[in-house]
Image (cartoon, rainbow, N blue to C red; front, side):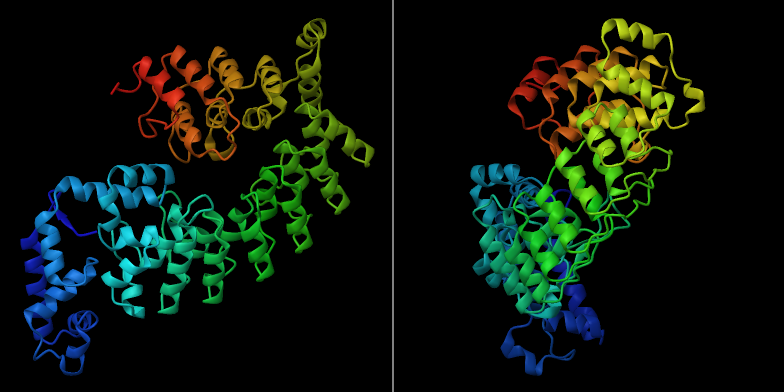
Length: 512
């Protein structure tokens, strides 16, 4: 997108840019001469040098760098464009890289944004328009353009229009193949503000994010690096597993943390596919010393998943960093079927007083609860009780959370990402757990240690981005509103009519 001055396009700014570029080239500055020659009319190339470069050559370079075929088209665009139109175009491209529904809404309401420069054409897969707006050479195809300041191929690979549900997905794959054919970098990447140490490559956009095997194949054929820590890892999240199969078939390394991520959902076929490709069932996660079996129980996976791990040779009695076995975790969290399965396959059934107490609490009658209340475990001797509380809340084990609280666990203790039990319950939409925690006095203003978000902030973000869509976020909204929680506006409106209507009625959103 063209640069703006105070929110509006400024023709004089670009005139000065062109004249400065001309003067630099005429002084013999090689990069300036090269910059102009890359965008010059073909017939001018044989004789173009510092001595005979003209102002219209520099103007053409400036225009083409902004996604226009020549200076006249660019000048006319500036003259007829308003700040509102430019803002809509930028919003459209930004939405196309993040929220397909919002991008579709903008496109339906303002169809002219489809013609608002190069990056709009890129995210839409409009190959004809892309051809008319840019010069196809390895140099120009790797130069950053548009509001994100990305190379053109990144807009194609990360466009949500390239995803499985979009009718434009084939057009995006074809445009990606075209750009690669002319020299675009298949290993181009960008740095996310949230993950500054982990560049996100084109292949991740095509496969892990958009699940577009045709676009992924084009990138791999062009030399994309398969083991980038993101592509295979996130390809496991898609139901059809097409991109996961593609990456493994072409040689992606099945080891690393992918086996743990695949256990974040009940996907037996995906687990088998990864294990058949050579994933190590005895791997140990570096952050918690957990085996895949620990992870499966922690995430509440089915008995079929656990049975598959046992069949493949997982260490059934391995202990994680808090000294607990998978059996102890299953027992304490009320996963009785899995606990029985582990015991039947030779698991050590030894339990700590805390694990036994929490497990018995989940199934106890009122009379048994009274007896348990008179024999509370000593939490001071169990340093992992606080982390256990957040883990149980994260996995919707409300009865077990209640048990730990009754034993005196610190309600605001921290777990993954330095978040509390209330953070995780809000993120997942566990309304009953949220209610329990709020009634027990959980802090609404405590910030997690990684993202500095409050529990109500995690509610808004989880409502949009939590991959498990089974949560009751309307119920969470009701609980938060009932206690007067300050819900940040970052993720509002939510885009869910019933929740937005409720928030408006209670003064959390301005009525239209």
